[in-house]
Image 1 (tube, rainbow, N blue to C red):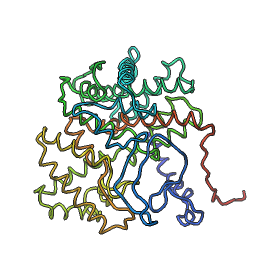
Image 2: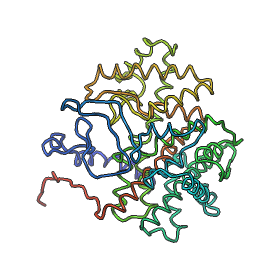
Image 3: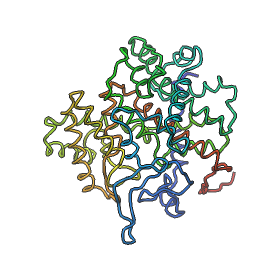
Image 4: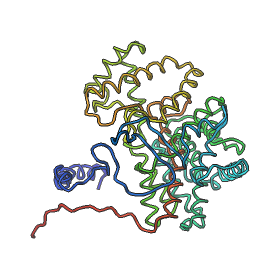
Length: 444
């Protein structure tokens, strides 16, 4: 049977599936089911406890819950304080990774030891790049990475050992290997599918994760201190986010089933690659390009407001009525990661001569929340999130869009690893959510 026939059959049957699987919306209200495990105000259903990170977006004032500027803690430390504690050109990915995974800030000797270990395992098995990554190149770098992660299990003689020590070892190795899986996966795709030159640079053990990313990605291996600092900051800000996101919950669910580290991390990757989770910065970039094509003066707030209004009314861009990069499931008045990141975006834009584009971003950031609040029923306010600027930064760094979600993964695997270890230590039960059947019984 030809593939076309199977596709036609599936398309015909899809209508039957829609008819038989549709559940009346009123039943969700009737049984008190919270879609997406969130209530109408965005509050999540409590499904676990964690000591890894914390988010706040409101505070109790005079007995009433009141929106406030967002705060994010890693292991008890405010993210702003972590970033400020680093020197002007100090790169803190490794230090923050140690903090999240081990639960405490490393002293200088512990940090140097951790860096040496990460550098030592920042490599792939012999011929792995040729036999696995280059064997079936794909534009979907996340799929390429997932395949590579699962294949790495075949090279691990203790792949199925889920003890804390062995799982920690596997997590550290994967954190170190992720930049290679992502960048090499892109270069293989770029060579075979785009007919560009093949570039495979080995990482430098003396360099940080951010520096190695830029070194491996670029033909000439060159980068500036500002570029490395901005990328390092982006990775730190994306490392972890409270435990209530889809991919981190996936990590804990699969871990609770007793599965191995490779399967667990690949499952988290499969969650992150979903456009509702990890692809927000790509949508921001597409939207901003569309705005550029319809706005002649980036400093004309009235012209920008006119076009944003059309986007919100589903008359422009993708006609979904969304201003991408605006709003967050948890934060209300502001996203602390965006507040921190913006100052680094400004430095990079000045270095790259992109101040005019930054003017456009600033105006959209100012105007969009006002328009959205006027036209939508908003419970907790609207503000830009970290993804509003991350795509712009990646573009200025010369990172191709095919790698945007992979860059998120390179950072977030640190948080996944911390949650896997915590789940292994604290929980001894498989996570089994309840679903109420609303099926009608029938007679043959």
